[in-house]
Every structure is written in C-alpha cells, then in structure tokens.
Image 1 (cartoon, rainbow over the protein chains, first blue to last red):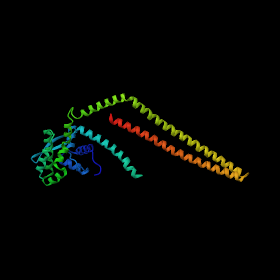
Image 2 (cartoon, rainbow over the protein chains, first blue to last red):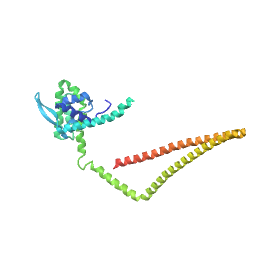
Image 3 (tube, rainbow over the protein chains, first blue to last red):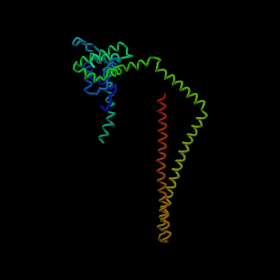
Image 4 (cartoon, rainbow over the protein chains, first blue to last red):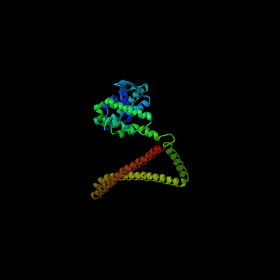
Length: 105
Length: 203
C-alpha cells in the first residue's frame, strides 16, 4: 500500500471492528487485516493504548483449556469512535476535494 | 525457528518493560499463536517479523517512557533553551548600537529601492505616453503637411512613427519594471513569512 496508515486511523479501525462484536486478538487482527495492510505493524501497541485510555476493556473466556482474552468497547470507546468517524469524514472530504475533483476537470 | 523459540527470543528482548507488561505481551502473543493454530505458526512468525523487531515495536512506548522520566531528558533542553534566550536578549541589548544601525540601513535600502523603482515606473510611463502622444500628433501633422510639401510631410510622418516606436519601447520597459517590482514585493513578503514561521517554531 502506498499510503501508510497512521496510528490514530488504526485505533479507529480497531474500535469500529469491535463495535459490532467483542473479539480476541487473533480474529481482531484478521478482521483489520482484511481491509488495511498492517503487515508492518502489530495491533498489540494499539490495543494497549486503547486499554490505557479506557476506550477498551478485556475479559477472559475459557477456550480449549486456556483463556481467550476478548476486547470490548467501553462507553468512552464508543464516543471516541464517533469522534474518529467525524474526523475521518472531514479528512476524507478534504483530500477528495484535491484528489478527486482535480481528475473530473 | 519454532513457536516457542520465537516467543522466548521475544521475551528476552523485552528490556525496559515492566514485568507486568511483559506478562501481558507474552500472554497476547502466546494466545495469538494458539488461535492461529499449529499449522499457521510459520505464517504468523513471518507476519510478525523477527522477534527482536517485534520486541522493539511493542516496547517502544516503554523505552521512550523510560527516557522521559521526570526531570530527566525533557526538562534539560528546556532549561538550556531558556539560558540561550537570556543570552540572546543580553547580547541584543549590548549590541543594540550595531544592530540598530544595521536595521536602519536595511530599512533605508529597502525604502530607497521602492522609491527608485517607483520613480523609474513614473519616468517610463511619462516618457512612453509623451512619446506616443507626440508621435501621433507629428504623424497627423505630417499627413496634413504632405499636401503643402511632400518632403516635409514625409519627414514628419517618419519622425512621428519613430516617436511612437520609442514610446512603445518605454511602455515595454514599464511592464518589465512592474514585474520586477512585483517580484521584489513577493520576495519581501516571503522573507517576512519565513521569519514569522521560524519565530513560531522557536517559541
């Protein structure tokens, strides 16, 4: 991918994926990977930051004789996601104005 | 490299990370490998990159945090900067006769440049307009004179044309001077903007 994803954008993607359902690390990574190329980074620092900020919370569920750690959106996380969405729309339309309308000329 | 080896190297490279966080990191990646399944271990290792590199990535926050301990590296440059600022102020006061003179000179030079260009513009405009005007009148006179004396008429027509030609040259000079003046103004503006930006960065 030519355009590198920023850490804030990655946070937004993680929050958005977790909005639908609680997920554990591996599946969460796979879900994010489906849409953005994160081969150069791992989600762990992103999750840790979101946990520290109180946007996420975790709970463990037993699975196959061990625990799976699920990540869940908190109310603060939901607010943050809305904020990110607004910011993204603004950012996207700003870039579109330059990139897309220029082509139409 | 096996999964366990990978995890061991990862753990041994987690320096400057609090023990509790090391446990969290290890738990996360152990689980990650488990969920990926035995058959995907190699693929996961490839995706995560070398364990040393992964260790750097996940502990980056702590490494920078370690250096940023209170009173350590964050305050020091600030203090130095403050001293530096004071030094500049003292120097500025002591050297005020010098830089004040230089400042006045620079302002005068800029002012003179503006005045010179303005005068040149005015002169060129005046000369151009007069020459063209005079030329047209002479040309007209020449045509009228043509009926009295052909030679005088032709001479006047020639002189009128020459006059118009010179006038056009002056108008061209005027255009050139205007573009030069524009460039000068733009340059001064840019310099001022750069200074302003620098100032904003410094303080």
